[in-house]
Image (cartoon, helix red, strand yellow):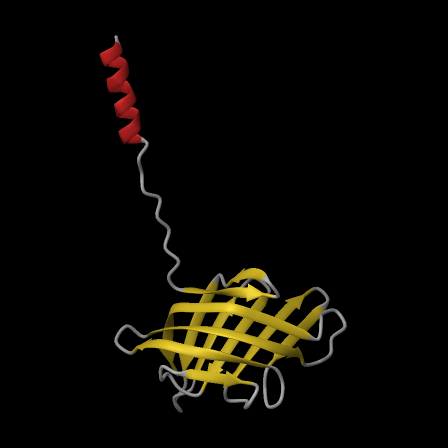
Length: 157
């Protein structure tokens, strides 16, 4: 009887061992005002002039990161309109837009890898963007930190 119990126990032990592995590739996420944020869909667009636009979407949010090229380097924010971060929230009350630009906000986008063969881009970002319309339904500054985008598919225009 003890042997049968041992065999049954071993059988259940081996049957219950499974690998439930979930991959998060591509991924676009970060901390928005100290709360975890993850896009449910993302894409990157390579323009004819070489600029790159990385977009992440949730049900009612859109985060866009723009750089001047795909070269692996750091792109400072708050210094131009060709390198910028924009966050748009659309809900029943309307649209709230936060953005960096010339003299507005600060931060950086870091392109760590642009894979021209597989057409993907990977990197990090952090920024403080200003409420561009001074919408009273949101604060004056939006903070994103610890942002990562991983193997976002790139399409060309």
